[in-house]
Structure formats: structure tokens, C-alpha cells
Image (cartoon, rainbow, N blue to C red; front, side, top):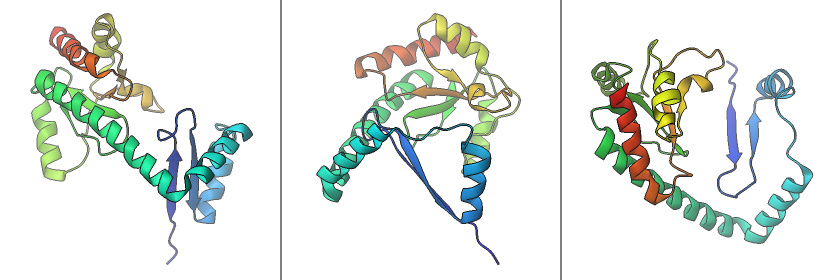
Length: 194
């Protein structure tokens, strides 16, 4: 039996202004991704970015990079935890979400968009990410939330076919700690008004 394997990594948030990925995979997968997918969508990381990254890593060494990565991880973990505290305070009962283990975003489903009891039950039963139906969060996010100064994205913008989804993506990475409480409070108001 043939096994197709893939390891994909992104080097981005740990070093400002440097973002690129690497793919290590079985040849058949590399050819398909390289030729059919990325050749028309991606450009090579600039030589300057590659050289800056190389020199930075050369200077840091493994231990320095590991130490830096731990500091960055802790920084974003604290931002995530602060954002979630505000979500629990203002959105408990109005939205459901999973606490992200990585990344810089919360994905949530407003209760006004979908029956959250069924989502919570599915999540409890299958221990999977939230599953949506044909509901649409775009109206809440693009009108009510935007009018209140809340910048979040309806999940539909992340789907290649643009289908409707109840999901909302909110970033905790760029929001100042002092603004988190107010932002989530305004999102609550937008959900209640929808």
C-alpha cells in the first residue's frame, strides 16, 4: 500500500514582516500542489526576505529561535485569553466558539444566526469544530457590527464558492488590550440588534 504524506509549515507570526511557508511531502503531492495549485497563485518569497530570515536564524541559532518562539507564543496566548474573557463576559449565550490552540483568530457562531443548542450538542458528541448549515453571518457583520466600529469577517469570505456560513472570524492579534472589552461589547450589541 502506498502512503501519501505531507508536512506543511508557515514561518510568519514569529518574525514581523516575514511570511512564507514550506511543504515537505510525497513527490506526487508536491507536483500536484506546485504545478496545479500554487504556480498561478503564489510568488516566490523575495530574495531580500529570504536573506533577512537566513541571517536572523543564523544569528539566533536553534536555541535563540526556540526562545523567541516561546516568547511570541506566550504573547499571543495572553492576547487570546484576554479576548476570550471578554467573549465569555459579553457573548456567553449569544454565540458559541472553540478556544483556538494556535493562530490569531476566534471563529464563532452568533446565536441569532443559528440554533446554538444543536451546535453545542454536536460539538459535545463529536468533539469537532462547529458545523454550520445554510445560515449566514454576513448581514450581522457587514452591517450592524461594521456600523458599530467592529471589524470582523463573515466566514463566507474564506470559502472558495462564497456559500453562506454562520461563522464569524474575529482577530485577537491586533486589538489593543484596552480595546478588547469595548469591541466584544459592541459585537454583542450588533448580535442583539440583528
